[in-house]
Length: 286
Image (cartoon, rainbow, N blue to C red; front, side, top):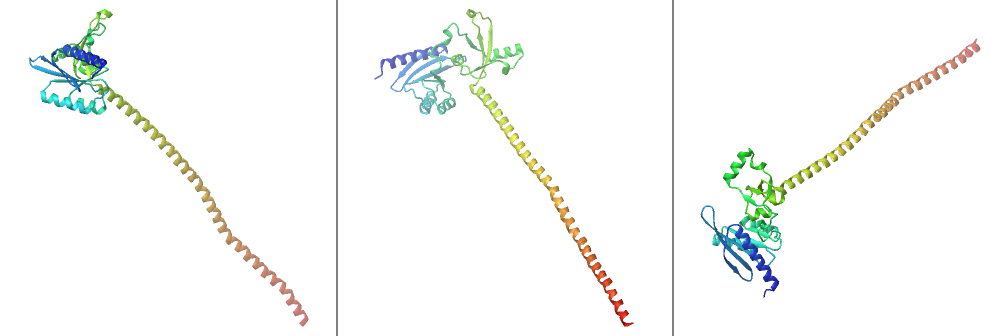
């Protein structure tokens, strides 16, 4: 059995969903409720005089996963619904968000207001321009669409009027706040802003890495240069040692010459000493 608080919450959500659908031009046809879901069906006649149907589902279990989104997508395909909305109290997981985008299911989270935000006097009215109005606007001011200021698709006012990326909005200024005239915004994807920041961060990271690699290469080159310098400085010392060895080797023949000279002088001295003895022997004979 549901408590009083749960019943009051469900009634509040049901009234908020009705208000959102009615603001979008739908009329509530029926409401189905069971132990798992509360479904609100609505219909409207479009611009081409074609009938459009919508379903807003509120799961009573606050934890919404991929399974609940796939069930709603299957129901949307079986009943040929033009629009499917899912009211989620708790934040969705990454895979659940991805699946909702894949199946074209609009998620209305607890952060989005479950009432007509344009009823408040401070909130300016947002009007979605037709293709003809967009062309005349661009021709008048001689600009292209990407030069128009941006507004994210996750903006509550954008969600309320069901504007999609690429649509141009005319926002009427509030005269109560002393504002006059109107200004324009083009709707962009919420991921485009994050992609730009990711790209910038990646560029910064790559630049930092390049700087770090440059510093490392500079350090390594400086080290190799110092090593080569020390090696080149050491080489002349080796030459000196080789020269010294050569001088030593050249000095050896000179030593031999001196020894030979000494031997020759000794022999001469012996000969000179031997001559007087010969004279004495001749004298005795006489």
